[in-house]
Image (cartoon, rainbow, N blue to C red; front, side):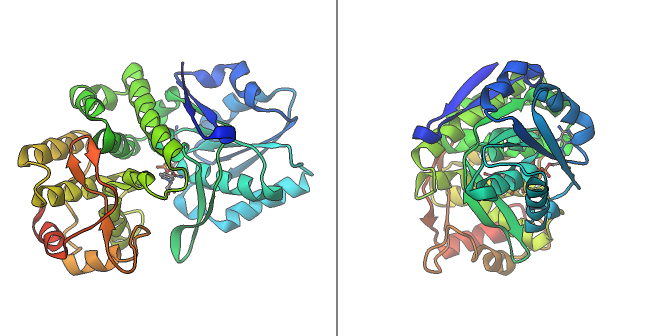
Length: 359
Ligand code: NAD
Ligand code: MG
């Protein structure tokens, strides 16, 4: 097992990564200080892993909430169901919540924990690759509002993150690939050596080689933890984690949520950001080709949907959180392994990428 630390002063916490670590009695106990615990999961994950977690909770007063599966349940209504169960069960302020599932459950439970009686401790047990390398680390929690994704939320850090890589054995291939988009992103934004490791080991990850997965998760979390430690609330550096996301969010919204998984839209967005970086004279054509080919090998889409033309794209990108005073800003690549901070882009070059890349 590997242990990393997210360094945030008194809000610091460990990330444990390893195969079958959910079978350790000691690990979870170390971070459960009270006798009351509520596990929140969904209908897909519960039959697979809930018993395994409950076995670690003997001697505790344990409640569980099993929600339906899906992004649409990352809602204030789901939070209300959990609040209601907490209050009805007279669960007090020193109880702990456990999020068992992918990013939807993690974001929802984190948000609920931040709000219940002004904050109760919570533990992340992420069970998708995306959640293990991204959403469970860093303290961004939220539910969706009908007018916008992640619009109601809080920064709230967990007590620990417990990433059992063996849970990925049951994950759908498409979900695994979507998680790999974010993994590749870490190499691109700040870790050339990791990018090169991914070029050499991608097939091992697709084959779910336990050792390779553990390494990729650890290296991804290390990169995310360092960025978050430097800029917890995204006043600057943390924005580099959004490489490919300005294009990607436009694709997700423009095509309707669910057409592309988040990681798939981000993969296309990374390719477009790479193309734009080449037009600015930063990346050479070979580097763009390396990026596109690694994403394609990860079984991710690398060309934008034909239904979205440049005008529609620009329209959708105009609502991005990184924009300032109506000016579009995005993360680009100076080279493989180094991202820019959010920067205003030349509208002509952006239009050229939208009209020409992958068309
Ligand atoms: P998800 O939670 O919907 O999980 C994907 C699917 O896999 C679901 O059907 C789920 O039930 C299933 N699943 C989960 N674990 C499984 C397992 N071990 N075996 C089989 N099936 C399993 O999606 P996700 O990709 O994990 O997370 C996406 C969410 O994360 C989005 O809501 C996104 O906004 C959020 N997110 C948050 C952050 C953050 O910093 N907080 C970062 C990135 C993404
Ligand atoms: Mg993302």
